[in-house]
Image (cartoon, rainbow, N blue to C red; front, top):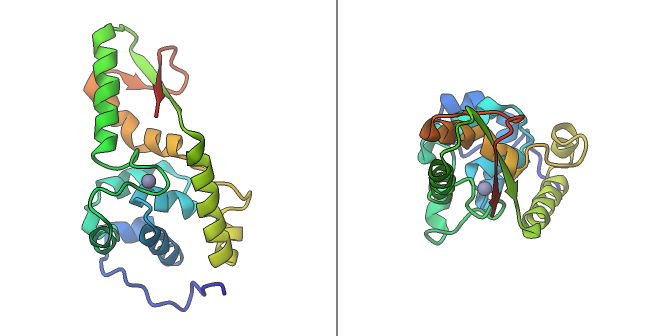
Length: 188
Ligand SMILES: [Zn+2]
């Protein structure tokens, strides 16, 4: 049976920053997704958020404020997100930045701008599909409104760029640009 989003009392006990990012209607879906094992950025993706700023703000919000605190303790320590397999979570996200930064610094490119192209395993797409089906089955009205074309608009690659591209840019002293001729290929 479909959950009634409107009538649920929410277990989020924080106010402030996160409330500006996630609307009350989104919160239940967000919470269900983190219970399933999604990291906070993936939960936001499957809530249908498309703007960049909420991702950046959410990532910089302390974990305990982002609804993951309780769920994290239920999970086996170090369990990666079921959707991105840790690509959007510490420590893997930091490791990816380090690896790209090291590779680019070593090559001493003088291009002022750069771009990153990720190749993801097929399993990422299968996982995304399963989570989307979960949202569609459990929150059908929400799904119709927030995923009007029936796909996740912000994929793992886009979410990575939203949150981590500028961190990498600072690290290598270049500007991230989607049209940059210097493109680093990263196979996950
Ligand atoms: Zn994730």
